[in-house]
Image 1: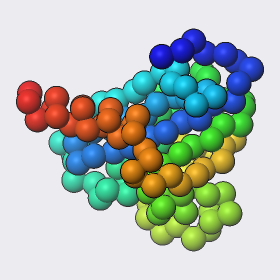
Image 2 (image 1 turned 180 degrees about the vertical axis):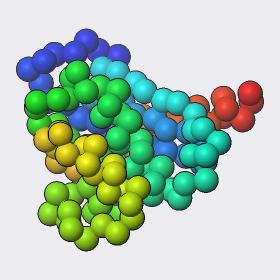
Image 3 (image 1 turned 30 degrees about the vertical axis):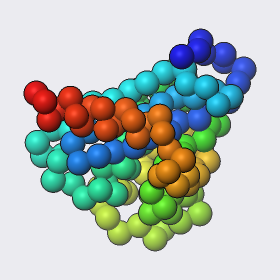
Image 4 (image 1 turned 180 degrees about the horizontal axis):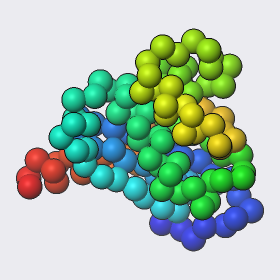
Length: 137
């Protein structure tokens, strides 16, 4: 892990599993912070796309002191989440939970990108590790 440099743009990569959320905060291709947590019982019932969206929203909330007021990039391994959080598609979302997540993200200036799962190691490893830990508990 490296120290945060306020002059370098941030990138947030997030992921979700059946029982956990995770994200990494990156700068210049290097991780500067990590976030993960297990899902509450009621959250486990959410569909996977809602969990992925929740991971993005919680990462934004967790690192708002770094992200507020500056442009950053969100990266996800879910194409549907890219569609839902892409500012061009804003009128086409029908899921109320996703609409609430969009409202929470509306205070940020971001670009969102898709990265295939096989190229998505850091947040994937965190969410899977949190998942394994939750199952052991």
